[in-house]
Image 1 (cartoon, rainbow, N blue to C red):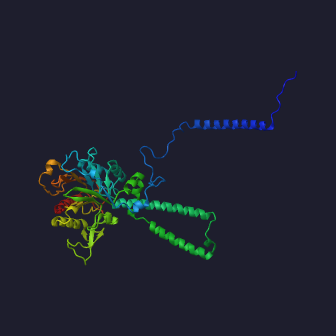
Image 2 (image 1 turned 180 degrees about the vertical axis):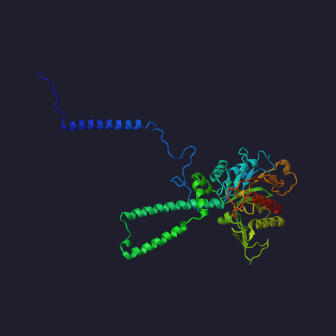
Amino acid sequence: MGRYELPPLPRTQRRQSQRSRVAGLVFAIVTTVLLCYTRSFPNSHSLTFPWPGPDEQPPPHTATMADDITLASIKHPTLLSSLPPSALPRPGADPDSSPHLIIIGDVHGQLAMLDALLAKAGYSGERNDTVVFTGDMINKGPDSGGVIDRAMAIGAYGVRGNHEDKVLRAWAKHRGKKNKDKDKKKHKHKNKHGHHSKAEGEGGDLVANGEVAEQVREEEEQEEALSKDDLADLATAAKLTPTQLRWLAQLPVILRVGAVSPRYGDVVVVHAGLVPGIPLEKQDAWAVMNMRTLLTSSSTSTSLKHPPRLEPSEGREGRPWASVWNELEKEKHKTGKGKGDRTTVVYGHDAKTGLKVRRYAFGLDSNCCRGGDLTALVFESAGAAAASSPAVESEYSGGEEDAVEVSGAKHGITHRLVSVSCEAAVSDDDGKGGKKKKEKSKEKHKDKGKDRI
């Protein structure tokens, strides 16, 4: 009997079998290559990236750079915001349990001085103390980012100063320039691949277009030319993280603290100043961040009963706005008009004048960045016993690094000034500085505290 042989497979089955063998061979080769590759990199399972690490921050001006910060929020900041009532000290309460309200002048990147001032003022997170900055937290000093981080860590409030405004605008301008450069590269790439305009095919129009393009280029270069201050602002912006920039951008221009007590009326914090007679909601944001004085028209009255039309100025000409403000508020108190409508303003900005305490205006910029002091105004409960005692108004003595109480406690709330000495972060405008300048500044502070009432 002959051996039985299988009939040959149909052609289609033979092809399928060949494909299966080829696929198996390919899979084996690919697997072998992958195994060899992974064995040659034993640590490939723990890849590292340049950023962000646990203690590192991503570099600024990247795709993740504060994408939710709109140019509108930078160019048109929130004008007015309010402090929650829970942040205010409670009249007649135990001073050790009632929250303190600590308003701090221009820090300018001096983190060590800020920490020293918080410690000396007795800041307590457990007591739910509230810290408010009068603006210019950044620039000039060595650690603008550290100051912002400290503010965020303690849940502080603040207002936008002229330096925050300049840094944010420098960042926005740089960002816009980068976007413009990208558009130019796209346009250049498009023209390179033959998509030329119709005018380029005509000789006369080509020359004309070339002249126009050159003129536009010169205008852009002039527009983008940066001054020394602009470069400093951009350098500060480049060191800030997206979170820090975002925090700065949300700061209002005016912070309404509220009615701390009848002695102060409605307390408001701004960086530079306010124009009397104009509601907070209608103040000009630029003026609030930059003004120092008020100019009056020679054709208008200067009577307190009929206030003249006042124009804010960032220069030194005219009258200090705080003097005019204080006179008008005192007139309200004297005549009884608007008794419940008095407003006390706490501000910074005017380092040249230095610490200036008036009945209804507290100027806290004591020139820390040039070796002066860093100053805080602390509102706190005077306790139940003090609230029932007669009010005693004491003058600010301006002693070095002294926490001096400058108000009585008739309404259960008192305030004091606390200062710490600073190391100069920048040179003086005239190139001179040092101990002699600092001593002279402190003498000015003593004299200026005497005309507040």
